[in-house]
Image 1 (cartoon, rainbow over the protein chains, first blue to last red):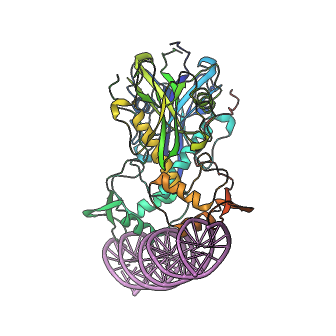
Image 2: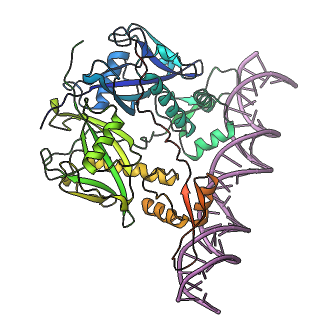
Image 3: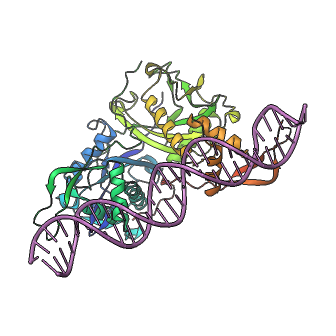
Length: 237
Length: 237
DNA sequence: ACAAAAGTGTTCGTCTTACACCCATGC
DNA sequence: GCATGGGTGTAAGACGAACACTTTTGT
């Protein structure tokens, strides 16, 4: 069969955190053409000789570019078009976009390979379109919308939620992500009904000015609804 | 910058319909290696010289392989791994999977290019794993789960739902997709509350044995929640 | 005692479910 | 009239929002 030129295949990572109670996305300053000096999601090219799967590629990119394997990398979508990336044949670029959440205090993101400058951009105060590289503006918005939908449904992927927390802390975190206040009683009843959290026996906040709060942790995190990414391959004929 | 070998990039289409009130997926018999004589989703290689976008590529593949542009092609997910496809470097294959629904009576799918045999396989009675090519078994299941989730939420993509229908017909269609009975009154109240359908003035079934039923059509179909696939590209620096 | 935050009830309205009932038509 | 499917109403329960209330601690 004929072999056709293939698009440039990349993985991009929309890493999100809370800064000053604002949902933010990590962007990296591009040091090279195309889109030099504009801001882009951290990403990298799929390496057929090094990456066993797309998911593994995302982990490698996370490690190399961000210095950490970010928790619960999840595939968001794939985009691809002619004109997306001049480095591909016919400027054809495909990007598989991943999303990850991280706690703001666990980001000693020193900048990895070829990363000179980075910044956290609030999703509700995006940069101007002409400061963003590629079609990443829409990818950022897409990732933010999905994260908010998950938090609205109280589907907590590990990452942003600390290992231990008080219920008020968890509520504040949700309110920051969603950008709206929640009712304490309703919030707790939902958590209880769905058994999303469990108290750590005997654990209470200490050294706090007023009444100590019980400390909780997440129960087992169910896998997201549609996880299909290939790792194991059936033998072929 | 160095140029790395790129994976084989393909688009696959999970085309679904109802046959005998069973949700089915179209599979094509592979006439060539790899996986010769096994059943696979119809698909094709992304052609950088012909396809402006991934979505357009899916449309071209639909046209060439199935003879029709299937309605409301929607991206489902992307999979990629070494070992997925021996035709790629390091056997690396990426597939962007699309999903589409079609009415069973509008399938003069004659089989397009390189299509000798095809069959509709009920999602609830899948073929044995060793009769399916690649990792398509899980993609089929994934597509079916999403379609059912959409019908549960009464999110009707055009395609499976006829242009005109009675409410009972629409309900039967949902019941077939979901594989469970629905309550007539509740079903209609939801449709009304969300303004999903509107009656065609003066239109009633004719020649029917008993009381004629009002004929409805779908109201405007909202775009799905997360549509981001790139078409327009911002100018680059 | 008081302030501040933790934690619990209670009410009210809305949506869902299950089921019953009426209506229109051809035979 | 009556069988059959079209179409509507209703009571019971589940769920969620809003709000008030009680409890516990440090000062």
